[in-house]
Image (cartoon, helix red, strand yellow):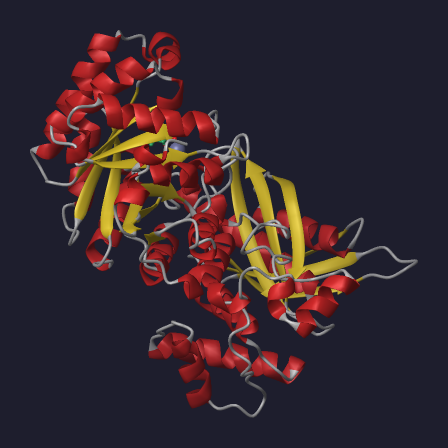
Amino acid sequence: MDSKANPRTKRGPEKIIIFDTTLRDGEQSPGASLNVEEKLEIAKQLDRLGVDVIEAGFPLSSPGEMESVKLIAEQVRRPIICGLAHAQPQAVDAAWEAVKGAARPRVHVFLSSSDIHLFHQLKKSREQILEISRDMVARAKGYLEDVEFSPMDATRTDPQYLYCILEATIDAGATTVNIPDTVGYTVPTEFCALIQGIFKNVPNIRRAVVSVHCHNDLGLAVANSIAVLDYGVRQVECTINGIGERAGNASLEEIIMAIKTRGDLFKYTTSIDTTQIYRTSRLVSDLSGIIVQPNKAIVGANAFSHESGIHQDGVLKERTTYEIMDPRSVGLGGSTLTLGKLSGRHAFKSRLEEMGYTLSEEELKKAFNAFKELADKKGEVTDRDLESLVAEELRTISETYHLEHIQVSCGDPSVPTASVKLRTKEGQIIADAALGTGPVDAVYKAINRLVGVPNRLTEFSVKSVTQGIDAIGEVTIRIESEGKAYTGRGASTDIIVASAKAYMNALNRLLALKEKA
Ligand code: KIV
Ligand code: ZN
């Protein structure tokens, strides 16, 4: 590395703009379909986390997307709210329409720039692409000051042509130019050289913030994103839990904790409150149905657990022997306070408030009843239990069918049998029973007989929220119907009940979407 070319050595610590695209690129993860309320809830949590920019969606893509971007723009006032647009007039207009109510709106225009995309997909010449890019940035600039431009597939674009596009779009008014590694193809050394080339060959580059947007196809998204900071990149695009198209995007929590933990190397600041990381990760996983792998850095279930005796011994003697980060710095294990059977409504409410939940009277009543029921069963109720309980009680989507009752008989030898009662929207109770290969299979078959929507179960996972035999079990499932995937989540101290709830949750999502369509 040429140390003279390293802006870090010339200036003091600089702020890196954190651009979160969980609600846009993250939502492009297969199976992650969030409804409007869920997107708003995630946006509010991203605000608490402290991100600078929330890319809230791609407004032209559907009326639901337009609605959710508008709602986030109206209700989440601190961060910049960004709407994505492909380089067509109606997309730019729709993005502006969606974000114009924001305190700080941004429109993000993108168009492919690599020959491979131009030739095979867009069937346009380089000259045409340059002109469209310039025109669409100028169109957005006619509406607002803050305009971002992305030459898609930049890392497979001829650098000389990339320089021309960047220069033209900055002249047309782009205040941020983003360099996407759309297919996750580049590697750190090559990417750093590209960024150096951009700073050297684009004459007006200092008039814009240079951003990167890395995909993880080769597992290098985070490495690529942080390597280029030393070459002048000042905005990083990323997602919570690294979710996104295909293998996902660069993971926000990994980038942030790398910058923080290796403060000796990275002299940068961000506005992220790292103690909100864990909660944000859980929320995104719960609502999107995309499970975090146990060995995922920073937020995986095993990220801070030590299995080997030597490691445990070291950590007991001195935490830093085997822990490079304090789990409390990402919001894990801070509270030792647990609520129990005797805790009253006031203690319950204040604990939820400390955890960042503000509930209406009606919601509080519902959640408190569920808490009492849980405390009766399990004695001690931890923060993790409370999070699961709030998720279960308050995030109910509009239900076409409500699970009223299930009863299961199983054993060895026996034929697993389930009877199920559902309540329809109109209040009618319907009931049926079925046999299955196991208790969950029997429950799902009984529900299928009542709901009658053909679908295929493609994923089923069960995990316990806390340790102990009396822990709450959370079930996350994915079903597919007519080529679309739907996720469902259910929690209960009884995993068969949790499985039934998860299935009803997925079916209700499917039915709600069908009704809307
Ligand atoms: O990966 C990509 O190129 C994108 C653009 C829209 C920035 O997501
Ligand atoms: Zn992307």
